[in-house]
Length: 496
Image (cartoon, rainbow, N blue to C red; front, side, top):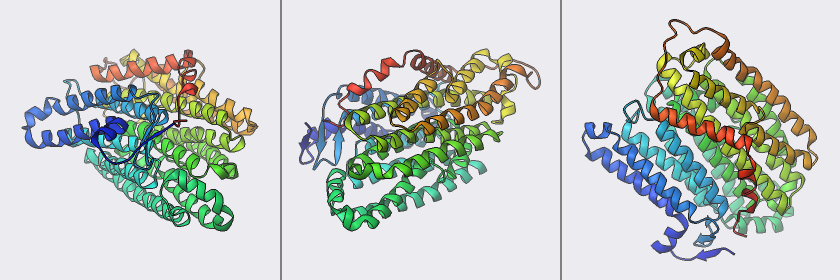
């Protein structure tokens, strides 16, 4: 049973949101460091070191709270295993992104100070979204993540970066307005911003206010769909991904997308669960269109970042399938099984994405290009990078013995068990489509000679570490997926 902690005593806040407090304090400390220390000290990697230590401390604090349940105030901010598993995922992704941002001398690339603390604040925003059970706190977390991401995309100070950041800002601002407008309708009907209380009121008021509730739901869904780049709300992603620094692109593709799905589960299971089966056609349609459009558009891309951007759109379609499955057979056991499959694939996708962008970072640095031609003959220049990239690409496509195959298998199995055979078939078909562009890049790396002299390319130690961690995780979760899948259903997901 969840303990509700009334008031705002520090001890109570520390119990529920210690990881967020640690990262927030580290972010403000980094702002002071950035303002106070001379440039030479900033270049020495002080900011990155502080951020890495803060992430490790916050991760330990999150691990120690598994099995505990509590809530701040009237239950608007929750501590449960559902929030904790997502917080660990966000922090793990951010840690890999910070490592990926280090150069040959252990210094953070890009705008040193603001790059690091904005990344921490974005992580805090994602963590707030995972714990929020109230429309107000949820919107605050969403805006912390969004505003930080807008600035991070524009840090490169190039024309493409400015263009991507501006498109992301404008479309993201419209999405936030849609979310807020939809929330106002839900509040107008229910008189509360608390998701569980709103869900109870909506169940009673459904027949009288169905039109208003549906309009509010659709507005919120449109705003949320922008955040997770679901078709047709995906237009910002390719330009933002291409313009952003490569580590930030990886953060958007992995952490920001995972935060969006964490938010979707809270909102739609808490506030709209009573009529969840009625939304089946909506979820199925979004999943199907997103899978097909994302993979089709990726085939014609020559810029690797844009290709991975459209690939991430297709991946969002796969991740929407568990929602469609829940509308077909909504009960407790099915919920925990689908949440386990959703989280497994999010974790697997985060590892694949971090590894692929780590390889892209090294290749783009040496080739001074992010075009597919930069990967031509990569096996001759760096067998390690070529082999790792091949593993990440085939994992995204769903090759057996990789985490991508295991994740898609668990999601497709849920669809089959609830009668959505054609949706599972569409997952298979679009995965075959993905092989066309993934294996096109693999063919360039292994079957074509490099342009110019085939000198060896050196990989910075930090980037090599990210590649190795992602490679071990991608293969490990593919060979032994039960290690995670057997433990996830046993978690105290929603504090019940």
